[in-house]
Length: 281
Image (tube, rainbow, N blue to C red):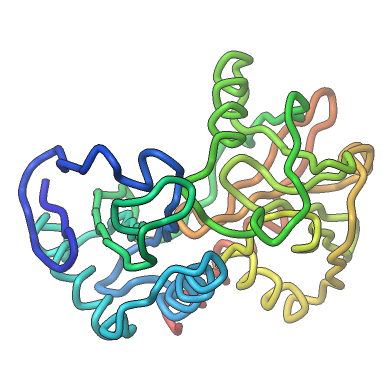
């Protein structure tokens, strides 16, 4: 496996890090997960500007050469070094403050790491079997701007994923500190009722997802009214359809929540539209 550390390609399965590494010790990191397919990074502009915005929010110093062109070049070189340029790949770009300091960093200068791993399909495909989901209620998402960022501080998602595995579920839905639906472990959440589609607002603490943004733009074109508003978990029993979105998998439909079962009509239409949207972006 080849990876890119600070603009230099390296081979191997391990990266040596300083024992004072801030991502390791404090979760002091920001990352983006992206899908590469058909010789392009899907929705690269959205990923790039979210990365820049998130780095600014946590007061990381953005290198002068961190232009869209420079980072895309680094990503493409990493993909090529792994022999993935003719297929699809999952790309992760991580940044963290350089080693030094305790809670207070020695400085705000960053390191970056790019990895690329193969994906099976070059286009987004809808899962054949609906996901089985349930609520995760041991811990809650705290409603704040920090909850909307993709950071290395992901312990809630990790523990929820352990719970998911222990209970034979495909995914868990997270609640915020006001017991409102927020998102899934690794995806944003949408509920369909007739010609209306509901999704938690960013103020609920959900991730500011790239695919979420794309779906919100597509739904009105398909004749749906979109409602970004707080959602009580009881609404899951009243929904016709529930689906999840992220930049890697695209759209995944939920087949069952407890005894409630769902269709996938809207999800199927959205997958085709997202594939077209990715080709035109």
